[in-house]
Image (tube, one colour):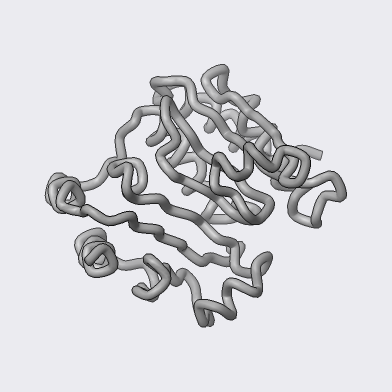
Length: 59
Length: 142
């Protein structure tokens, strides 16, 4: 999605190396996606579902 | 000892040769007293870069090259910026091992093509977005 839009940027964050972030975002299981700090997506979800979450976060 | 096995290296060399369109960059940020995964990540980045003429590897130091780090919005290391003719905002923080390595090589191709590979409906919906979106995907080495 980052490639598709100039407004979207996307990070892969390897959880073990950044424990302060996993604590901050309550990451217990992976993959967990955090969108704009507040919207969370657990697991690997289908593209349309992920899109919904991105749109929700971009309100 | 190379991190990428011979069979994988040969496969990737061919993949990149077949699929890379525009030249792209792997911009890595690390530090002098390399953190445990910084050294391996750097080695991995250099090995991947060696598999294609279209991949340009740049290594920066997070502290010494502070302005570059700010320019790329990098605040933690190891960090790999996967950039093409422009910076699409794709970052890998931490070592991309296991399944994430596949994601990295797929991103290299996608960035080089400038094509997200997303469904048409998704692309359409994304054009309606008016605010910045920051996606962070937390993973563990598999």
